[in-house]
Length: 215
Ligand code: SF4
Image (cartoon, rainbow, N blue to C red; front, side, top):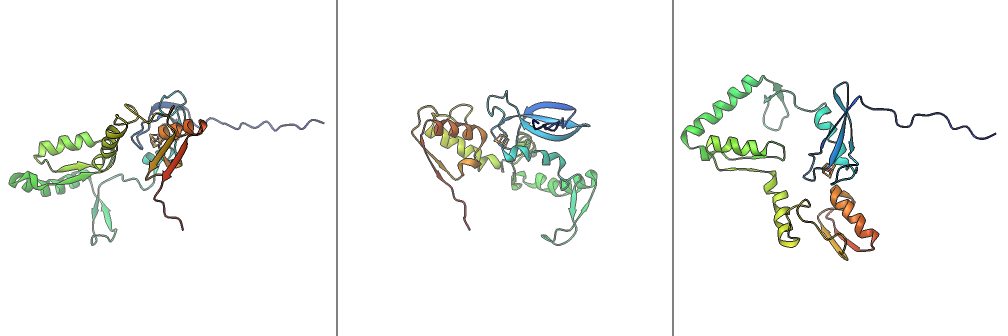
């Protein structure tokens, strides 16, 4: 008697709505399909039709779901109540938070706004940060890009002739030896991983100088 395959649905729908957008967990901007169930993000997958990643989604990209769903996500301003480093905070209203911030910032702005220096991480509001700093009157601000992607862009211009892979990238079709510094090849961004795949198909040599500490 032929073996009967159980009638399993191996790919049940996980959502009732799909929105197409781009991942912002790093600078590659891979295309993603964001699945929503009852209006909440339930799953993120790579978009097969997107030219940058062709459906590939890295672990960091899929972890983007936690930007929305993480229980630890801040939902209201927190005020420190214990000594610095004690981890003691209480939730306060936005009105109270803004009042505290204005109390700190107003006197400095009146006296000498350039005394305010600040740094922001990589988020989607970097242009607003600079807007705000200029309106406040300080030139002393910086963001994550000054330590990360801008350096990469400068190195790209001097070596490959392009700032990012959108504008210039290694010659994946002709390179015979590819050296990669500071990252494991399988930890790389999707466009680079796909390029590495091309090199390996052609038998090109890949050397990774990866500063990982092995125990
Ligand atoms: S390489 Fe990963 S983190 Fe970066 S944009 Fe693509 S999916 Fe997102």
